[in-house]
Amino acid sequence: MFIAKIVGNVWGTRKHGSLVGARLLLAVPVDPASGRPIGEAVMAVDQRMSAGPGDTVLVMDEGNSARQILDDKKAPVRTVICGIVDAIFYQGKAVKF
Amino acid sequence: MRAAHVIGRVFCTRQVPQIDGKTLLLIQPLSWDGLKPVGDPLVAVDAVGAGAGEKVFYVAAREAAVAFDDLPAIDAAVMGIIEGHVYR
Image 1 (cartoon, rainbow over the protein chains, first blue to last red):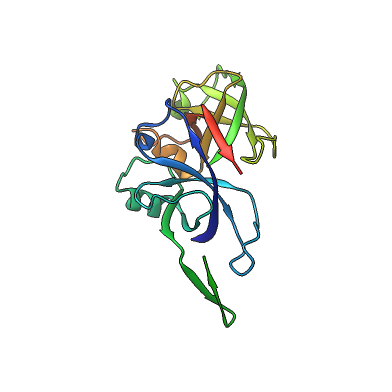
Image 2: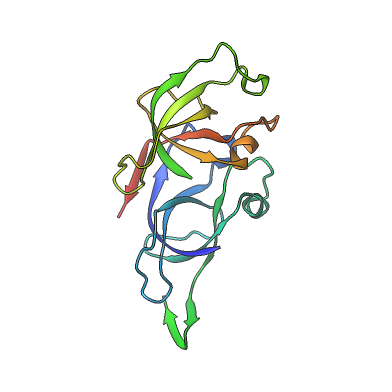
């Protein structure tokens, strides 16, 4: 799993059946302490977390876990939003979001 | 799961049976930030009827095989056509 910030979303009607009804968000991995982006944005599925733009989230980054979270054995998904981060305690500091 | 631009199709008269009957699309991966080309083109199996010139999103590795019912031996699959996206 990695910590990321929601920076956008994607929409399209013609897509794989397992993605119908799921929100497709763009999440860029961020450094927990500073919040600076550290890498390429990825598209992650948000089924129940209803994360919004600017939210700091936890992203599951492995297909099998993603399919269990989405409860869909056929979902061709690797990254799923699996939590909205409220705070991180890191190197003795508390980072709140 | 990354964005890509469909830049062509690939036809092979001789190919392994696992990819028979599947459309092979030549795609150029794009960054979500500004849809700029990033990395080298690759060949992905089409799962949604994407055509040349369309902006799509694809998935790689085992998730590509999961996109199909019979779990074929493929490593990348186009599974959606981008109608629009926002990137702040």
